Image (tube, rainbow, N blue to C red):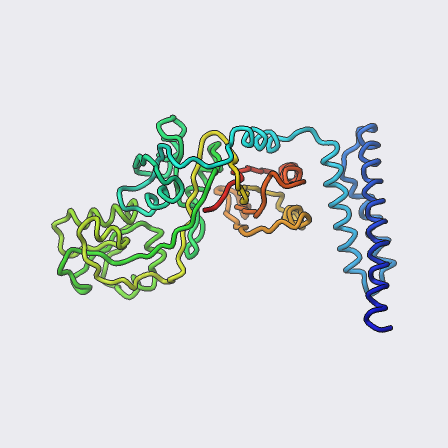
Length: 378
């Protein structure tokens, strides 16, 4: 057969597959009604194993592919039955409340809690996210949450991950333990410089101050200074301010060029970070869940059973809808042996068909599922 004839037969086979698939899903609807009437659970692993055994026996060399195909059919069938039978879940209620509370356009003004001081990267992120922000500076990430929870500030801005050093675990832990919603995010290109008082040269420096994330991002440069003490502090802007106010001529800060100008410091070296492709993502949080127009990113934290196939089952749910997962990171659970929670980001909107049902399915399948928000990244 030539290529044209083969394609014609493929088209005919595809039409047949589609017709049978639609018939099978229609039967899944009827089975859902029967299970509801009889009070039976949706999953039936014994029945699935019977079918998979028969498929494997009949498929010959194509057995692995046939097994995968029918496993996917089972997932689709159970997803459909969950949509039809399950009562509204916690995540659906949360999302519906957030949609009703949100607006078409994200506000351009408001009072914002920000960890750091004038000149910090968090300040720049605040201004990117909310251009006319009234910024209230606080000392810690937890204090950002406290300021929003108390009503002192409407919004909070926090770093959540860096392209070089990964997620900011402290922020994720706060999101996990406190009920807040991510409503917007932004990425900043971060460039670190070694700053000191005018006239200072590299050989004069005996101590360098900075935030631990900046220290991690400049590890190669710092390792070339074995006799210099590296001291973590609250943030990079605070490090620059400390150096500018100190009488010690032997200290320096890893900070930004903006802070050099702001605090009257000189650049000792501008080639200190490990990678020029160094970005930090910042999030804007609110106490009340809201979803604004343009939301195209979903974030969640989940934990699943520690058994074979459990994580695959979770990851297959967005994949079946063609949703891209652009972040999946595991984090060990403190005090529990080799158990993990996962940080997940999806490229999707809850306004798209079947996305809320998919999130409900995730919630039912996970030991823990925390919906952090559906938001736009700017």
